[in-house]
Image 1 (cartoon, rainbow, N blue to C red):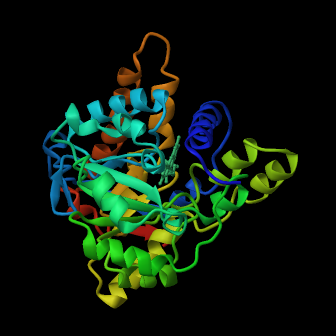
Image 2: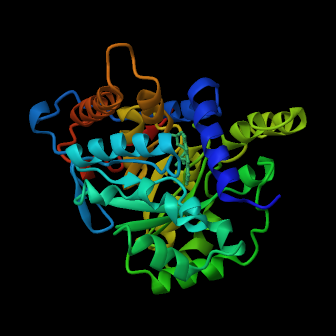
Length: 354
Ligand SMILES: Cc1cc2nc3c(=O)[nH]c(=O)nc-3n(C[C@H](O)[C@H](O)[C@H](O)COP(=O)(O)O)c2cc1C
């Protein structure tokens, strides 16, 4: 089945509906419980002066957290993106856009992604599936039609092999992508990121990705949103069965991060690793940073706050409320480990039982 703008729009709408109403998460977030942050009975600092700033891709952000690429390209998506952009602007954190493939299929969709028109100062990360490079989209399209006109600050290529297998209209030819990513890195005026979407990245894959010259890799492991389940729910009983079977496929975010950090330490690589997938509070963020992540990305909890705000709250108020829960729990984790800065969290953990 060939992907078209109307099919793509229908799919995005279905993703939103399913994420809003169904149990779409994989198990694995509890993996973070295997790590204990070192408790510090004498924090020797003031909670109010904890410094949460973090540098990523040569930019200084107020918190080590970004809103991971989610929606765009549909009417609802524009409202969601504007709400996310307002938060990213207010708190000086990076914002990821959802797949911009629709914009390349039909330029009328470009207004849905034109965040910089209103929020010129936010750090905006573009997004497209790497597999699109085998389906008519070229490095030049990405640079000339997405990065430059939308003034993007970085661009993420997502790897979603499992999702494409379950998706009825999925694109399943993943051959020769590394070479094409290398081409984009060579031509791009902004840093290129490679990300998974919920199955994690192992160290052997990381080694190959590093050779392409990308600036950052988001391991995006198991423990959060499962695209296998979501695509199954969009289709017939057989696809649902397959989607459910693969719900818990992959490395958890913790496992993936540890595997990748071991490799980067050994290889003395300075690629910036980020952790997304099942990050559900500030303790998870503190643990990921203690392991060696630069930043953490959050998707589903923020998405749900916006599309199903508690009674009496606007979507923005609900999003901000959820965001502050992450920030408060991060600051408490930093304080209670005696970490005055994000960098001071590094290495302050034990595996359970040690
Ligand atoms: C509603 C929704 C839409 C998403 N769309 C995209 C997308 O277009 N491109 C992408 O790379 N990832 C997309 N993702 C995946 C996220 O970026 C992230 O990798 C994944 O959701 C894991 O994080 P979480 O467990 O916090 O949701 C989407 C996630 C959600 C919840």
